[in-house]
Amino acid sequence: MIPTLDTPRLRLRAFVEADVPALFAIFGDAESMRYWSRPELRTIEEAEAMLRDIQDHGASGNFVQLGIARREDDLVIGTCTLYRIERDHRRAELGYILRRDHWRRGLAHEALVALLDHAFGTLGLHRLEADVDPRNAASIRLVERLGFKLEGHLRERYFVAGDIQDSAMYGLLAPEWKAR
Image 1 (cartoon, helix red, strand yellow):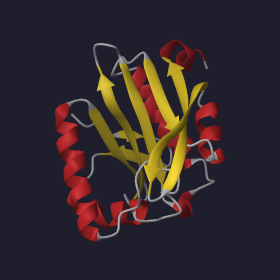
Image 2 (image 1 turned 45 degrees about the vertical axis):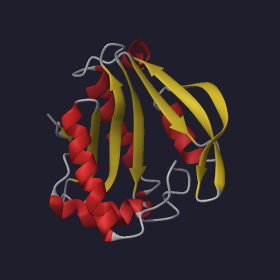
Image 3 (image 1 turned 120 degrees about the vertical axis):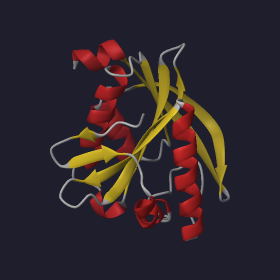
């Protein structure tokens, strides 16, 4: 079951067919996708396929991707994800992206606080991991502000559209989150 999580300015919710243009606006922007481990979407059809993948993976129980929607008009402006959920080990990986025209407003932080509360509370997870491109200073500030600790640096981990990318691996434990 995909949850709906409300914050003062946002609603984190399941995706619907009407969100395809928003997914394309988010994942089709080269600047927003600069530090991702895959290239940007090129066509609306790729966004339609992405929506189907999100819905199919969500049914598996080891993947939850929520749309970050503005409460005032329900427009999706980003996504936040728990993936590779391993219930036996009580761990998951964290992903997030926000449409570029909504950067630097604290919205990603607001959304992730709600998602982390859900992960460590309702889902009973013990550990979350975030894989961040070390060149992405804003994302590093965000995960560190949330309490994630740098645990390692993986060299030349991804090859994306001719670019070689490293990974900075961050971890956060449930007791650390609850103590904040």
